[in-house]
Length: 126
Ligand SMILES: [Zn+2]
Image 1 (cartoon, rainbow, N blue to C red):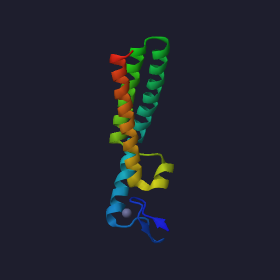
Image 2: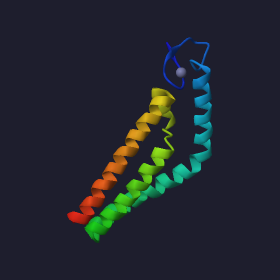
Image 3: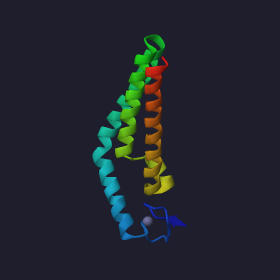
Image 4: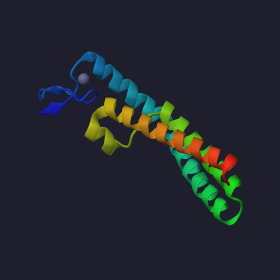
């Protein structure tokens, strides 16, 4: 059975979406994705690099400064994924748009939680 490209409801083979609402939402999604593509990839690279640099700094330089850098980058990534919940195409194909947005938001929440934990560790433990 084919699934609606937005909400993953089962539909017949002649349609791509189950209703006008889903088609409209999907168009908005792809449009927004295209517009924010570049910003997201730049922030992703910077964020992950920052996390790695922070980790390195924590090991060789100063644990609390390193963890602050890491947590700052995790917050940055978490906020970006929260407001720009665009999953890679393979995930969208598998779960359809609606669920992929939810998955990315959960991922964002995990990043924010990790950032918070590191921040607290930097303050109170290291
Ligand atoms: Zn639908």
